[in-house]
Amino acid sequence: MRRKIVAGNWKMNKDMKGSVELVKEIIQTNKLFGCEVYISPSFPFLNEISSICELTPIKVIAQNVSEKSQGAFTGEVSVDMLKSIGVDGIIVGHSERRKIYGENDEVLRMKLDNCSKNNLEVFFCIGETLELREKGKQNEVIENQLNNTLFDLPDFNLDKLVIAYEPVWAIGTGKNASSEQVQEMHQYIRTLLNLRYGKSSDSIPIVYGGSLKPDNSKNIFSCPDVDGGLVGGASLNPKAFLDIISSI
Ligand code: 13P
Image (cartoon, rainbow, N blue to C red; front, side):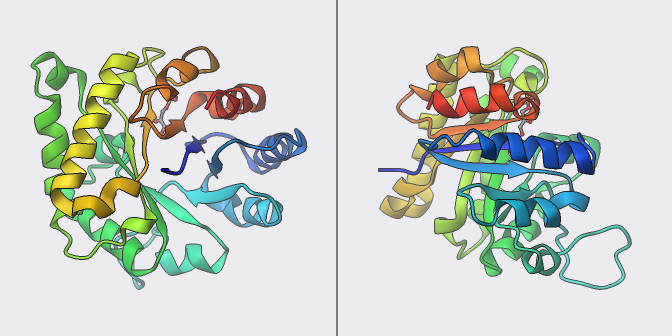
């Protein structure tokens, strides 16, 4: 059986006080989660939030990392720095990083390689724009995004990989992909993973992201090839996030 995962990407929201309050509310519910739970606060609060989560099942991941190891790269944060404060993994290739900050396949390939060599878990985000979906090119986009990055790396550590399918048109728009669209794409991604890695890829979780809410998560999570979710806006509200977790 594949791992089930729900992760909260807090993006550039919450200050120190707000981040601590949010994580404490999630912890205090005393619920036994039916899946693995991850949260991804902003860089300055990772240390504090990691310490708070240390004795809980919640894992803490960063929203980004440098493709470089160390040196004169003002404003960047390295894998070693994140490891040194107990961060468990990294979100790589989020569409906001690709679109707003111009991260291309070359940079993403280096980031993936860097994380894998350092044994950090990776949530690798892929997804098509509305324009390309309307042209029926979503499969081609996904295949290219994988071929030019992950699949080009000779020995990526598959045990540390989670694929996040996040159609760009569904992110922060309130318009989630339908469960049929999600299932169809996840099945396609699973086929691509099998072609590239063979049987050993069967255990790689594929999660969905894009306007996940308590009222649509159950439907989406019930698709056979959906192994969980990467939640943006709704993860900032502890009740909504916990409801999504319970719906898996
Ligand atoms: P929303 O849930 O706000 O649409 O964001 C999804 C996302 O980008 C998670 O990484």
